[in-house]
Length: 249
Image (cartoon, rainbow, N blue to C red):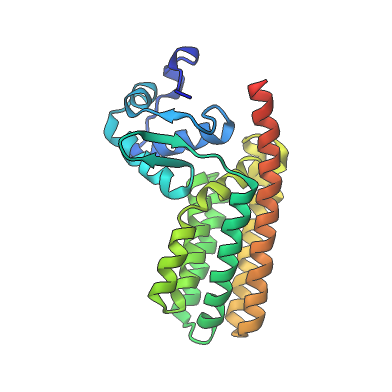
């Protein structure tokens, strides 16, 4: 399926944000989540550049970022295509995260320093700031950095590299979760939802357990934290599919 610019009108998509590629990534991400760019859509750089009012360079950078997040697949000599987010994808990614992060927590707790705890707290403050400023990228980016910092604290470079293979693609799930918080597509209401405020509470609770230094309790808390995240994302995905089905009808 190719993107049809004629049916939409390009002006309302134009991006004015610096750095430009981040603005392009934000716009494309939301168009994918809204269902306007559905799974299988061929994202042609020149068409997107015209639609968004930018050059092809920022589009190329944005597509690379979206590929890392799991929204887009870039096939050599063919181009970029919107990926489908499936129930199986969600469950697979969370199962891998539980395996890696629970192990990382057990390894990390015994050697956590005051500097590590301060880093975790900083990322919680970033989540709080994202809620107050309604900054979607900061919201999921801060969560990513929080969990990466925990894995890094295990001081096992190979484990961190394995986690990053999974972690870089969970952005699509985090944003999907917020975008359909409460069952309705994105709006100001999502920032007062349990999905948004509960994220801050959940990460602060996890931080408190980590600071106590009990490895098994910390691993259990991580398991519950990720289990709750998976459940929320699956609920959001179900809401998204209902919305996408209406769009296609």
